[in-house]
Amino acid sequence: MIDRLIKFLTHAPVNFLAVDEVCRTLEDAGYTCIDPTLPLQGLQAGSKVYVTKNDSSVYAFRLGQKPIGEAGFRIICAHCDSPTFRIKPRAEMNEEGGLVRLNTEVYGGPILSTWFDRPLSVAGRVILRGKDALHPVTRLMHVKRPILQIANLAIHFNRQVNDGVALSRQKDVLPLLGIINEKLERGHLLEGLICSELNVKAEDILDFDLYLYDVTPPCTVGLHDEFISSGRLDDLSMVHAGLEALLQTDDTPTDHTSVLAVFDNEETGSQTKQGAGSPFLSQMIKRIVRATGGNEEDFLCAVERAFMVSADNAHAWHPNYKEKYDPTNHPQLGGGPVIKFNAAQKYASDAASAAVFAEVCQQAGVPCQRFVNHSDVAGGSTLGNILASSLPMRGVDMGNPILAMHSARELGAVADHAYCIRAFRQFYEC
Ligand code: ZN
Image 1 (tube, rainbow, N blue to C red):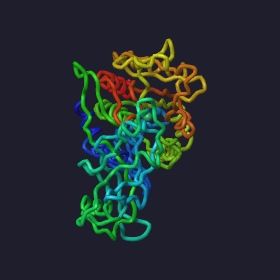
Image 2: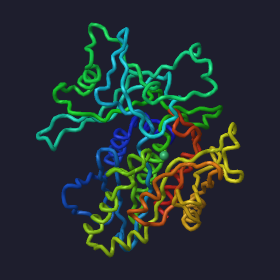
Image 3: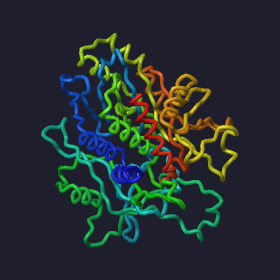
Image 4: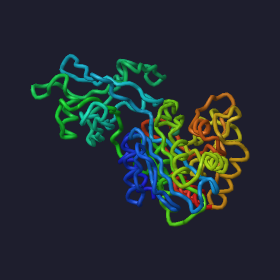
C-alpha cells in the first residue's frame, strides 16, 4: 500500500501530472472519459465515468443502483496542487561568469527555506500550436533528471542565518539552471529543454505552465519504517487514499452514487474554474441526474441526501513546539484520520457531520482524532466550505496528520495512510 503511494507521489510532481496519473488509474479500472463539450448520454446504474477540467482537476463518478435523486451521492474531495514555484515568462537571467538563473514566482505558501540546496527539476504542461488559434495542443512535461538548484548564501556572509532570515521571493529563491558556454544558446535554454523533452519545434511552442519540483524520491523513514517522507503529501496522500478507496469498492454495488473530486488551486484560494469554488462539479452532477432521467427537483433532492468528506491533511502534534497546539486536542502521527473543527466555521465539520465520519471510522475499525487550533493561532482553511457554497450538502473536513506542512519534504505516518483508505472504503460502501 505504501509502495503504491510512493509510486503515485513519484509520478505526480505537479498538479497536471497528478491528474494524469489519476486518469490513467481510472482508465485501467474501467472508467470511461466523458467529453463535457458533448451532451451526456448512455449512463445507467453502475456506470463508471470521469471528467477533467483544465487538465488539472478530475472528477470520477460511479453511479449507484438507484437514481441519484432517490439515494443521493457520497463524495470524497481532495486537492492536487502543492506549494511550489512557477516559472515566469522570459525566465532566463544571464549573469556574470555565464551563470543562468530562472525567474520564478511563488505558488501557494511554501516554507521557502526548505527548497534551498536540493536538486530540483521542472514539470507541468506546454501548449503547442494546434489546428486553429482556439484549439492549441497540450503536452505534459516531466523532466526527470535534476536540472536546477536554489543555492544558499554561505554562513560566512551571513552569521545570523541560524537566528532566522527574512527571504525575498524575488531575490533569494531563484534557481540556477546552468553555465553558458559555446554550446548553450543564450536566452533559449528553457525552450531547448522543452524541444528536446517533447520532441517539438521551437516555433510551435506557444506557452507553458511549468513548475519546480524536488527530484529526491519519497521514502519511508524511522526505525521501523513508520514514517513517510515526501513532498506534496498535502494533499496527494489524500488524493491517493480516495482513489484507492473508490477502486477497491468498485465490486460492491451500492444504492448511492460514489464520487471522487480532485480539485486544483486549493493553495491559492480555490477560486478558479478547476478549483473547489467552481460550479463545474455541481453542473456535472446536474447533467448526470438529467442523463439518467431525473430533473432539477431530483438534483436538489440528491444534494440534500449527499454527504461530503473533504480530505486535506491536518497538523500532527510536534514535540518540539508543544506551545503551538491546543492543550486538549492535538492529533498524533499514527493515531488515525483527524476531524477538523473551527468555531468560525473555516472547516465544514459540525457535531452532526463529525459524528457521521467518526461512526464510519468506528465501523471500519479505524481510530479517529480531532483537531482544533490553539486559540491564539489563526490556522488554515480548506475545501469543504468552498465546495458547500455550490453544493450545500452535509460534510466534514478531515485529513491525515502530518508534520512540516508546506515544506518541500513533509512527514506523515504509514499507519495513517492505511487507516484512511479503510475509513474511505467504509464511507463509500456503508
Ligand atoms: Zn492541503
